[in-house]
Image (cartoon, rainbow, N blue to C red):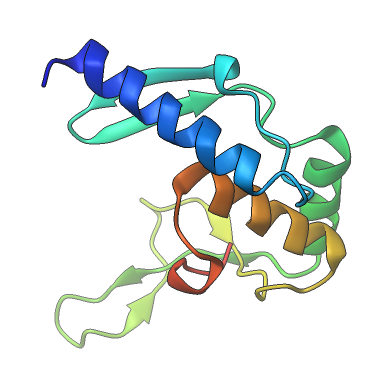
Length: 120
């Protein structure tokens, strides 16, 4: 199956799923998706989260951010390193209604049930 046909099939299945799930708060517009790769399959969805959702995630994360670590090759334990400068944190599943709504959007877009995904 060529890439154009695969892409058309994907959007057809997506629209069918979206109509079926239209009672959810996940509103997805397939025309905003841009395919950037098939192998691995990757898409960019401009505006996937609203400003409110982004601000909410930022406010949840701000007080919980911890410096990211790397694995120590000798001990296998985590340690900080000058080469890794990021910070991160985990948001529990269904922490609140906004996080649950984001999880619903992700489930609708990826065709994966909420239980099979990692924590945000």
